[in-house]
Amino acid sequence: MPESIPRHCLSFDVEEHFQVSAFETPMRRRHWGQFESRVEDNTDRLLGLLENRGVRATFFILGWVAERYPSLVRRIASGGHEVASHGYAHELITSQTPSTFREDIRKAKGILENILSQPMLGYRAPSFSITKDTMWATQILVEEGYVYDSSIFPVLHDRYGVPSANPEAHQLLTASGLLWEVPPSTVKCLGVRLPVAGGGYFRLYPYALLRALLRKLEAEGTSLVMYMHPWEFDPDQPRMEGSLVSRVRHYLNLDKTEIRMRELLQDFSFAPIREVFPQIEQMHSARLVPQISEV
Image 1 (cartoon, rainbow, N blue to C red):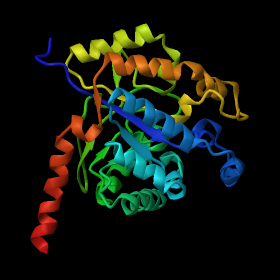
Image 2 (image 1 turned 45 degrees about the horizontal axis):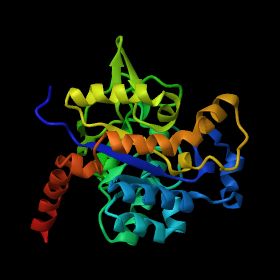
Image 3 (image 1 turned 120 degrees about the horizontal axis):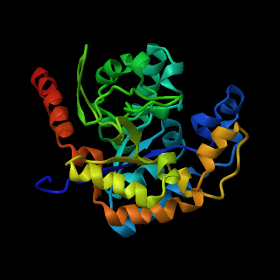
């Protein structure tokens, strides 16, 4: 047993319900502005839930959302939460070139930093789309000033995942320097890594089973890295057209999300990612030293 129970990371990917990759089509993307926006109300509801429980988290905010709701970004930060980048346009990295990816993450970072006047240290890719084929993205993240990433999911999945990836928080050495990688939580059962970090898995598994799996990781001294989306707390959201698999993944048990989240917040201790892993702040400070010396 570990000497002390670790604190855990709670995070939210802030995007509209119609921006999820499961329902992505070029036609739909062009008409984003015509869909009903629910992200502000959903996120405010979530902020109230966290405030009532005295919990702070990391919010990976889409630049597209931040551009339209800068006051929401400020409310998140004023609640003591960490603000980080989810990119700008919610385009899978697997669909981007290195140059378009650089433009996307630079634009998102600039928008968020202009709103808050503070550096954005963290990034999470849309749908965890840093894979073996897009590992080049980690070098670009370092070059664009990001200190940590939370995109490499060590599971086998039809749209994302690097099954052989290190499941623990660790440093990645890129051609442009070091990057902290903070992967979503998984648990090994019968030789297979199962995702337990949140999202659709949080809504699919019976909560008693999920809690037992998370306790197993906690007993091993592992800090959990959980993720959710504000739209998952909105069972009344308009239904989108899509495949049966996509609709099941997106809409399954939305009416149970808030109840399960309340249980999760009662059962585990959470904090923002950059507080749970102080090495992130240390790396950021170390990067600033050469810049100060050059002035």
